[in-house]
Every structure is written in C-alpha cells, then in structure tokens.
Amino acid sequence: MDDSSLSQTIADFRSGADHFVRLVDMIDDNRWDGPGLGDWSLRSLVGHTGRSLTTVVTYLAESASTIDLDSTAAYYASIQGYGDPASVLQRGVDAGLALGDDPRSSVKALRARALDELDGVDDRPLATPFGGIMLSHYLPTRTFELAVHGLDISRAIGADVALPASVLASALSTAAATAARTGQGEQALLTLTGRSSEPISVV
Image (cartoon, rainbow, N blue to C red; front, side, top):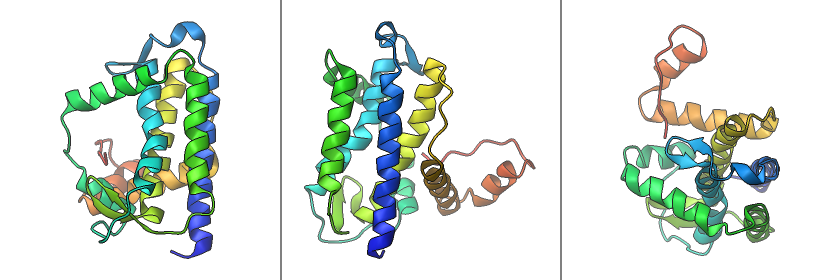
C-alpha cells in the first residue's frame, strides 16, 4: 500500500474515532448503566468500542517478523468462531469499568493516544493474536468496529447521527470483502440487492 493509501486509511480511522467521541458526549449521566447491546450495559458497550482505540496502541508496539494475514478480510476470516462469548462479554464489562468516573474524558484520552501513535507512522507488520498483519490492513478492522458499534450506540441512546461517509464506505468494503473471503459473497450480494433476506455474518 502506498503512502497516500495509508494516509486515507488513517484518515478513515480518525473520522471513526471522532464520531465515537461525539456519540459518547451525547450520553446522559443517568444512561451509563442502562441497556447497551445484548447483555452489555451502555458503559460496557462503550468500553468494548474503546478497545478499537487501545488495540491500535498495543499492536503498534509489537512488530511482527512475518505476514500471516494478507488483507483486512483475512483478519476477520481468521477470527470466525474465535473466542468464548462469555469472555468477550467480560472484556467489554471490564473495559467499561476501566473508563472510570468520567467515561467521556477517558474515551477522549484513548482517541488522543491512538492518533498520537499513528502520527507520522510508516506501514509495517504488526503482531496480533491471530498472526502478523500490515498496519494498512489492520487499521480498517478498527474503523469497521467503530462504525458498527457506533451504530449500536446510536440505537441505544436514540441518536440520529449518521456515520461519516468515508467510515461507512470503509466498513461496507470490509464487510463485502470478508463475506467473499468466508464463502458468503453470493449471499451478501443477494441480500444487498433485495433478492434475499437471509442474514450473513462477517464477525
């Protein structure tokens, strides 16, 4: 990926992070323990979404010597069926609690740190629990998470705030590529064109 493409990937991530911060700023003080997504409270949902920022910082500090995942879609294909749902649930709860008494400020600090780490960075292989992957391929996974969970937060608080166009485009591209990689491409196309209502799952 050339420098201009990496710059666009970082710009998409920045827009997703900014959108996330905006949504968190809209949460009333009495809503944090209310419904978020599934068994998650709103605090836990925000905490889980914040991991899209913290993992960038963590993985930028861990260089990989090999490339095991050759694309964003390969990353998502590698995690299909991975993880115990109870563990995922608990990580969200723990991340929400870690936001402390002022979750809005905590989320802003997470955003600032992630963007500081990306400032002037070159594309390079990162070590993740699922294998080595280039930053330019990993970062769209974080934009995807910010987009999808941004929609979850919007629905939970009844906000009518559209995703930034570039963030939505990036997330849709990731979803389509992952569907194709995991054997769901034709079904995704049928669903998107109104020829089927059968659901697909890319994460």
